Image (cartoon, rainbow, N blue to C red):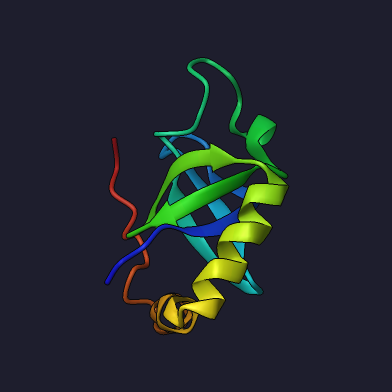
Length: 99
């Protein structure tokens, strides 16, 4: 099962391609942030924001409390390990494509 997993945006990887680096429980991946970026605003405004990451995309913004609660539930039902393994092995890593 594929779930959105909470992560925190820690850096801008490529402003033009709408890519940021997200930290998901210590695993860092570059993800597409087009779904959560404010139109016309610099991506640097997203640094520090918590998002739900699914297959290489930040799908929605969430607050830190919701992120912690979601990670707790995923761990309790055993899904966090599978999602973290997918992130670690790179099976959900986004391949940057020019826009």
